[in-house]
Each structure stands twice: as structure tokens, then as C-alpha cells.
Image (cartoon, rainbow over all chains, first blue to last red):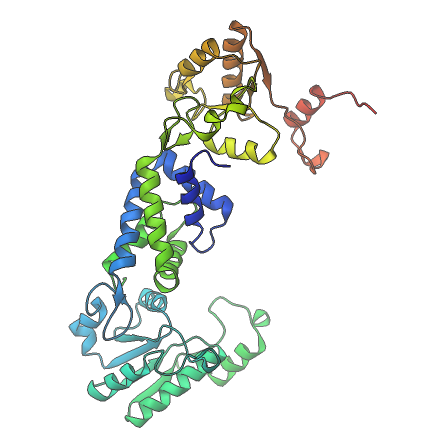
Length: 201
Length: 201
């Protein structure tokens, strides 16, 4: 029994956050009330703004509160001729952190999964096809996850690209840097053999 | 780089929660945006209400949005003649869960710590003394933490109680149930020997 209904309500609602159970929710609520009420108010404002104002970019479908996102608006990226297709907006963040890619993105917000009723339209492939037809791309990099569904989705999009005469490539699968051969599963090891590259000095 | 300033602001503000680092904050933000916008809005409302409306009970100093908390208002608890002194509002929650105590509480919101400028007034001992003088208590149970500061605070309050002729008791320290003797530190083991009880059949 909590001594305050509002506190109880707060603890209950904190559990909508992933990875937050009853104990953590209680710790968070008490922490905010005792030590950081201002932080709690700021968080409430940030949540309200984000939940109500953030929509999807009309070009790449990632999260943005504008009509188009900052990446799609960047003229240098518009001229790169590269498009990277990913499953989730968080994948963009991961790729951006590598600093290796300076093109634009297209976010599927999922992957093909006919059994769940998720077909090409649901993951925005009609919009992607329009972009492939109307804009100039030299290469489409397929960075969907290396799962059965991710691979199937990549194959499907590769076919769309080839119909438009655009080169399609798939990111490499293999042993993670710093990993050990014996700790890696057989399928990954197979991929790393098939994808081997000649060494040059 | 995030594609949306509002998203960036949300991720930054989620980090005011204890135990939430940059990676978890990002995961939480994407989860809410993709799967639970309504939950996010509810959480924002719960936070705003809790941060702005929850104050302290005028009797026991725990968190409540009313003048006095639900425990202090309970007539059965008012007649129990028992008062339990704890350091934090969360301690009340822990004790309530045992179902062993049916008296009222007094929350210090800390412990005596003269080096940090926390004296008797800062932990509300003036209010406690007034209650000891004006209300009828048979026993005051001192449930501050078994730390140097917690023990010192308990001793200080015990003296206040004795001045009013009220019995003061300290919760038992010893080996946790299910614990192993060899895994317990020496001080705890000493406590468990000093606090031994005769066995009755």
C-alpha cells in the first residue's frame, strides 16, 4: 500500500518503459520525488512533446517532427547517390555512429512478414519504389537484420532495384571484430567464408 | 546524430531516471514512439501530477498529495499506540509489505549527519518531539538503517522517547533468513549473538 494515490499511479505508469519492473519503477519514483522534481517535470514535458509531435519523415519514414528529417534535408547527402535501407529508426543511429555512411536512408519500420499480414505496402515499399523511379541513386545498400525475415525483405527490395537498373548491395555478415572463431555459430562462419576478401599489401 | 531534436531531447531527459544510461534511454524513447505512445502520454501526465502535487504528510512527513497521508488517517492505526521511525518513505513500503506492523510511521527523510549540516531540525525531530508530547504512544520502534548514522539517529530519538517516558525499541540486526553464517560479516554475526533469543517449545 502506497501512502499516496498519485505516487501509486506514477509507479504504475513508469512500468510502460521497457526493462522497468515494479522495484525499479518504485526506485525511480522515489528518486524523482526526493532528489529531482525538476528533472521529472522536464521529462514529462519532453514525453508530451515527443509523443504528440513526432511523426514520420515523408521521404525516409524515420522519426521527425518536421515534414522531412534533417538527414533527408542535407544537400550533401542528397548528392551522394547512396540509399541505405534499414528496419528501424534506431538502426540509423547505429550506422551514423560509425561515420562510414554519408548517403540517405529509408526506414521500413519492420520487415516483410506475410504470416503477420505485413506485406510490401505495410513497410512502405510503394513509397520506396516511387523514390527509386523519381530520384537518382547509384547504389542501394540493404542493411536489414541478418534474420530470415530481414534477408527475405532484402531480396525483395534488391529485385525492385534491379528492375530500375540500380545496383543493390547487402551489408557483410561475418565474425564480429574482437570475436573468437570458436564462439561464433556455424551460419555466421559460413557467411564469413563466402564473403572472404583477397588481401592486398 | 538524431533525426529529430524532440527525440534527442526526450532521450536526454530520460537519463534523469536512476539506472538509465544513454543506451537504455534510447531504447525507451524508440519503444514509446513505435509501440506505446499512449503509455508515454499517460506517463507524462503521471509525472506532472506527482511532481507538482505530492508534498509531505503534516503528521509523518511521508509523501502524499493530501494534508495527511492514508496511514495517518486510518483510525485503527491511530489507536495502536505504536510509532515506527524510518529514514525514507520507501522504507514504509517495505515494512507494509511484511504485514507485521499496524501502527503509524514517522519519516525522517534522512539521518543525523552533523558533518553535512543535517541536525535534529533537518530530519524533523522537532515535529516528532511535539507528537511524542501531545499524542499517546506505548512504544516507538526505531527502524533506521543499521549504519553508523542510522544507529546514531536511533540513539538520539531513543533519548527523546525516554524523556517522555515512552518505551523505545530498535529492530533486530542479525543473519538474513536464508543466509549462510560464513557469508555474513563479523559485525552482523556479533549482533546476531547479542540479540539471541531463548527457544521455547
